[in-house]
Image (cartoon, rainbow over all chains, first blue to last red; front, side, top):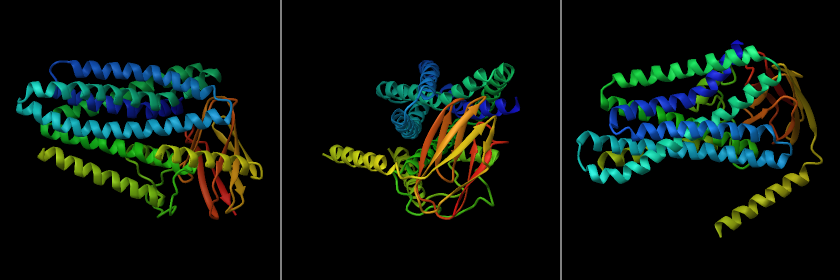
Length: 267
Length: 110
């Protein structure tokens, strides 16, 4: 039962965190309520997608469909990482506009696409990890472990929701400048972690040459195969034994983000 | 043009993996009740090989190895195979991400 709790908590935490951070940001910046509606719409759509994707993964019989789903999952990781990054840069620009209370009409157009971004990011976050949660819970149900199923679902979701609420609440306590900066950085780190899992999948499937693998081994400092280490790896993109090509792309990502960040500052 | 080239390369890759699939050594891994059998899979080093992973349940399992960059979710009763690229001699850990406390094993390449 403890295991069911841990797995559900871990699998759903990412989605809840993304939702929590977005909510805290919208709370501070958006009086119209449109952003929050977009957020909740996205979350609901994501839940539906999660069930659909989970069902697809469960019913896979042949290798070819398996491979297609694998490619689809890798693609969603890239799309999610890209969208979150783009959204953070949009939030940065938009947040400053709101603060200045200027160009209200001009912002309206950007607002619409921005809210769509919020909804899509929320939906992808829920769908991705949600699909695995669906399979895990389905497995429990099939094994007849109804009490573990009920216990794990209720406590796991509650704890993940609480964790995210705590994060959102602590963010909301900060002054607006700090809130914007911190929530942006958290989202960017999450996006880079998604990018790392996508690259892992590409290397594992043989589409991306690792060049040098592993480049180094820090598993004696922080082992990413343990329960806690894996959790850190999932959320930060940390790898104890990174491949050279992965590291280069990771560094390239942060390089681009920093350039984009500077640009929104001056623009 | 670029897309055509890309799909041609991709197609070649699929063909090459399909033809190479037959002479590949296959090893079996059994995931059962949060545990993995055997806890050490011995494979030849510097050779492509295949793992046939069966989840006997009860419950779903997730084969995962950050070191080998592989991840596969298995519903109870499902058997799937995974192709691995040539490994340098050494020990590579993998685990059941749905049962991280009990489901730990390794691949030993010799």
